[in-house]
Image (tube, rainbow, N blue to C red; front, side):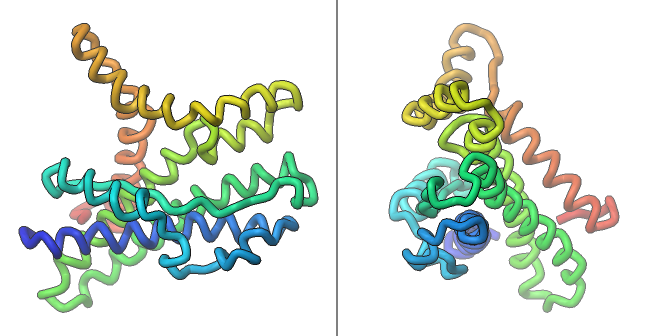
Length: 231
């Protein structure tokens, strides 16, 4: 589909669904384990408006979309506030709170896979649009889940590692959170360029994030389409 607004809708709808469910899942699990902070702030909601971050949900996805020549985008929502001290067992409960977001994304990817089975009953003029929505929904949720499970604070995977480490080590590991996104930018964007200049192919982002996300996407689509046509 070549229409710009159609292409935006194909990506915007899955992104809003993915980031909304991801953040709401954190809030629901935190509330279950005793922290009502998200509930008090109105963040236990599936309304995307309550989770939109002006930069991460609007500006960044549009910039990436245009820089990628209208082929891909990525974004994030406003993080749901969690007060670990309110949890009944802060150290272990935070592991479940952290896992809730990526688990919600995997669930949404699987729901997208199930919806592949309904393509045959979608009217012809909508079928391509719906199929492309499902394709991006599945891929983006796989990507978001795997990205967030990187073992680096403040990502969910980093919080899981913090919860699993003994006290002193957990504290030291958590202390790198302030540098977490700088490290990610370095690993995903700067390192491949520097290694390319040196004639060495080092693409940790592709190896650790994009490659596994693509493999999971192919598995889900293949499974629900009978291993055949796909999307």
